[in-house]
Image (cartoon, rainbow, N blue to C red; front, side, top):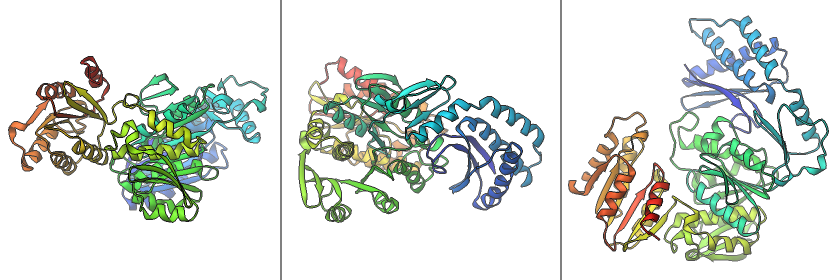
Length: 558
């Protein structure tokens, strides 16, 4: 058995719907069977000595180990994690470790830590907010009541004694998760809502912002980003991107939402504890469904077999989207009075019962590149469904879909014209995203094609070979592989390139068609120098597209 982590859970998670502490241990299923009851007894023993009561326990077997958690007040979560660390040590001793931890010393240390962490004012405010039916968000430094325009925020150690509870209210919230398409969908949904005249708060893997005002750049797709946006007092509506990492480590940033969207489930970041296969990844993404179980809508991709099967567990209202007008799930759903957003030919439709309403045609949406980028048609359907569930009219949805330009979606299927040839830039980095991009690249007319790409070292050899085969199949004349040392992730320098080169040669490429550079910019500049009028340069910007796009703009690309 191997200790992985003991940490706080601050929101709905795989284990709980509320706060607590989780212990993760790498072990066999048989070891997990032995460990869980011993761990629970040790936690209970410590809690009794500390006079903690009302604790709930939960555990979940995962591939490669087990997660064990117990509930705790939010002003005692650090102390709870110390309990979990001690309980692991005590359990490991009982199950064969050599050293027994000192129980009395642990009791004293944890009691002192809990006393320092305790915040009676915060717990009072939590109780009052619940009694008045108001949303409360908290973290180590701040606590807020209400959302967006209806919110007020205070330091957690400086909470007013008297509040006007009538001044607090919520704003609509849309949550977006999934494997591919999250960022494009939240950007498109944000554009639609802004076109409808609302101030939008956005948290995403790229930044947090209110309208065009970027508050901070970086990956804000966890609960911290959600809280930051929902505390901005000029926000009318919030769109929150929720990635796997934040859901696993801390849980969901909000307990309720008006709509939640899962774009798809496919291979990405597999192998991490808690998301080692697609079933575990789906379970993580499915956490967002809890926020809409009681009073919102869950938007799902009807073309994703795993989501279709999982939907049977959801007790609330589902809205489907699909690229297939004959999709059996959509057909049955709409015949029974359900709602779906569907592509039929080149028409994006809202279908409910027998009523079919036209949103627009696929070629009218700029980010679909005239209808060639089918993955962005799917993202447009998803964004339309999400914003409809948030109260945006079809007129405004239609206007938003038809007016979002490529520049508003940097790094996602951007095509530039430069000196008579085209440059396609995308962030695709997993099999499903790259397959979608390759389909698009194949459909773009070109005299010759060159692909610049690299791959992270934590992907298995067979997957890297598959990506190389799929790439060559689009009809390439040249391949430029970027080393990307920052993404070696345990491999030796040149290992990934060697695998890609070997597979390309197996596919029929000649040695002179395969080139290798250290950085993406070097690969990119080499390809631009090679390109002639009528050619297509395809760049998968794993390391980031901003510098590459700035270079294109500096050269007059349009």
